[in-house]
Image (cartoon, rainbow, N blue to C red; front, side, top):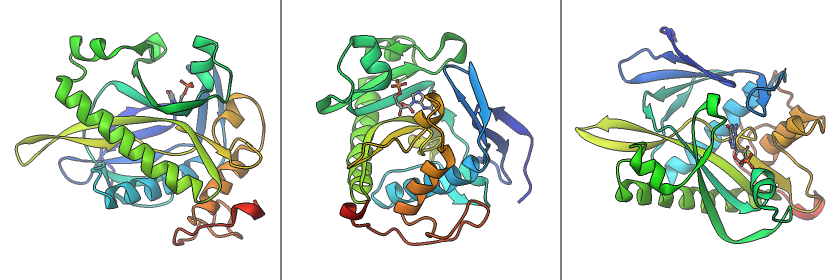
Length: 262
Ligand code: 5GP
């Protein structure tokens, strides 16, 4: 499929104009960055795995009635998506306290939260994606009003419920994750679509029994075996088969694994 001009290049993805008006092509790169770009590296095969894992999750969310920007995966590194106007807010959903939450508030790492916590960050690299309050979202018109914010918060909680169950079924704890949403005019109506990606780059995923990290913290904390961890997530979700390596990613149906054997 022919790509149009580059619209945006981020740390892990490039967005090109799509073949038709209102579409875009999302290209997954192998670059990994952390700490607001201070740490950078190339992790060979990461883009291919994130493309597949994100496709799997967004397709499943679509099947439970959550509208997403994903139209279809095109190839190993690219997806055809709806072109949306990105809301400049990162919605962080947390089930277990870790990362910036524990650093900021001195909460013991690993504390199980009594209910999911949603935090908001203003998407701005120069400012380091600062944490903001609900009032900032509305005051600065990043979100239209309380109704729109409640709608997105509810989507975050539904997505969390679904993903927690999906990952639990394959022996993984969904610790926290980041979501981005976009707006698109569909049939004369402003519609909110889940955008960006959901992958081990944007989630914290811990093995249920060993608490081994299966996500980007392996890069952030120099734990090694990054690609093996991402492959493990893809295998457990049934996206790639046991014998597959990243250059030969095969289709497969989601399957539950026996947690006791993990
Ligand atoms: P924390 O605020 O603890 O650093 O991150 C919370 C969760 O959101 C983690 O799962 C982390 O991966 C995700 N997250 C927060 N900000 C970003 C971001 O700018 N990029 C990516 N890829 N993930 C983020």
